[in-house]
Image (cartoon, rainbow, N blue to C red; front, side, top):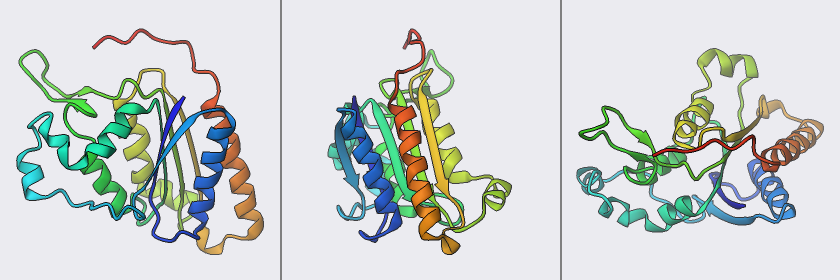
Length: 208
């Protein structure tokens, strides 16, 4: 197993960092190769520049500015996002990572003469995990539509392998969390990770 953790939080001492550590520890315990992309520690630039936009369809040159991230994405078979939910969605840093790294001929294939719509490009990703925290209640997050969860599990997930295994866990009401609720959530993360790491469902033939 080759696992890529995309981690996004500005505070090294945050509870989100504790979630990241549980995720990484469970992967290592299972014997996985693990790579961590710590977006804030790397000072990742999330803004898609004018030059990048103009060269967006210039494959493979479009991957040049984010070559290391693209290489990590192509390397992994397990992709995991760990981040705080802000305004019900992804932090700007993480959204910018998606904008700049999930490129044509990297994450998806553009329409062409024989195809009227985009096609998935991450069929090598067979496991997708999303672990987050948020200040709102579960009810309010669902009422708004949980856009962060939907972007990753549905949007990115649709680009991954058919029959992929997924995992999700969110600590709601973080502003009123307690030591007990945080400990309980870390146990939940460990349990979801163990299920994510487990054997894949019956393999499906992939045709491209």
